[in-house]
Length: 152
Image (cartoon, rainbow, N blue to C red; front, top):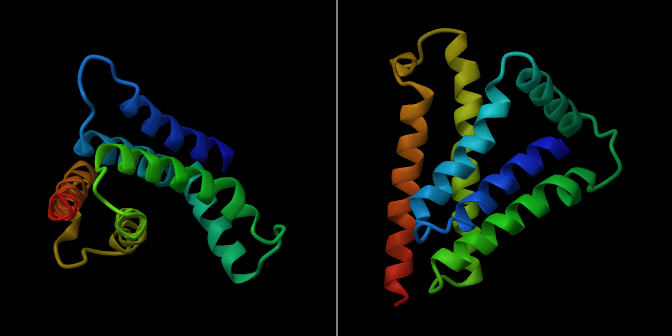
């Protein structure tokens, strides 16, 4: 879990530390989305990790709040700071809602991919993971940019 957290935070830091140009919201969301999804779709590690998460949700064995404190909070804090830097007109509530939306889309992709493996679900097998990430990036960037511009 710590490795996934570190990869996700590193993807955010990598975008923000670019020196050849000003980082864009699209670059940030794409880097985060890719770092979020790729480890979870790995046939071996990703599946085991997802099973552990589901089992922990249904029958908690870890110390209370361990997952939230050690994985979720640091990752979402880093993403929130990055969004604040790139979209300075958004207030904290809008930042939080944007994060919930991005992460919700990514989690849904992981879940729907499992369903698709059981059979073609409304033609979704024809859509590649890169196309899905492209859509999430475009969809989220458009919504967050519009919200940021409304605050100007």
